[in-house]
Amino acid sequence: MKIKCVSRDAIAFGGKDSSSARLKYEFLDIGSEYNVYGMIVYHGQLSYYICDRVHTRFPVAIPLHHFEIINSNLSRYWIFGIIEGVEKFPLWTFPEWINEPYFFDGLTDQEEREVSIFKAYKELMGVEFPDPSITELALVGDSEWLICPDCMDAWNSPGDKDGMVICPKCKKMMHNPRHTAKKMEP
Image: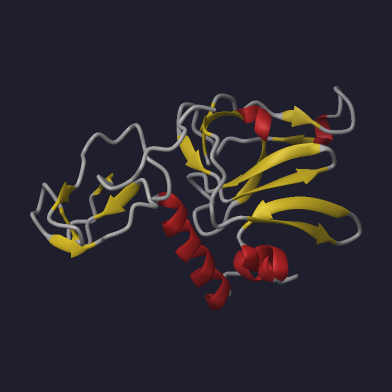
């Protein structure tokens, strides 16, 4: 799932005139696109877990009204679960976050295992869907290999599940020519 920031206005909780409970979203960039790493319904409001320009090591929950949907496909790495504490909150994200009660605490505390798991999912979700802002297409070498048109490096990549591929040598991201196009509209 991919979203685009359309607003970073603060919102008040506890009434329109509650200045003490205002949340500011100055780390969002209007017009920027973000990959969604999870969604939660918190006190009746859907929020997306994203990494903004400050929170790059772990995702933060930002209410949906700050965004428009660019690609509405849900990640194939997500499952649905309930996060329990004093209250119960529905959450869609990768299995470790849902199945391990203290996973997110470990991630925000920068525990090595949790950071490694999130980094792997972040990379997987980053290439999962075609990115319309990128125009370059990897070249097909044969049924098993792709070629980077920039550095001419070739790598084994027989799959068609991911919309994007990354050249292992020059790290350029480009479209996967084997990917069967999926729905791209919200």
